[in-house]
Image (cartoon, rainbow, N blue to C red):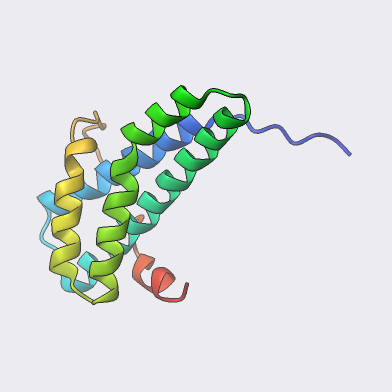
Length: 137
């Protein structure tokens, strides 16, 4: 049996997640959407923030095992906005308050608003069905 080699680093994975989140946010800002689309977008953002937060924890834990405590603390401090945004959005969505969840997304957008994206959006509807997926968790 051969070894499984992961070619994507956690940093590259985080970059991809941030670009996806930024793309979804820009689509939300530019297009008129229905309430169902807003719910899907918010659930997608929530799941993306959770994946980002988990990625940070995995990376920081690996660094702590190697006694890079300061590096791990700096990483967690730089990315603590993900867990904070996740907690706020999760509470809003559990209360079925989509407007509050969108406000949380607007606050978090400061961290990914400066990401350069291609002019032609790709995969505009990545978040379709995210609400149902989040509700069945």
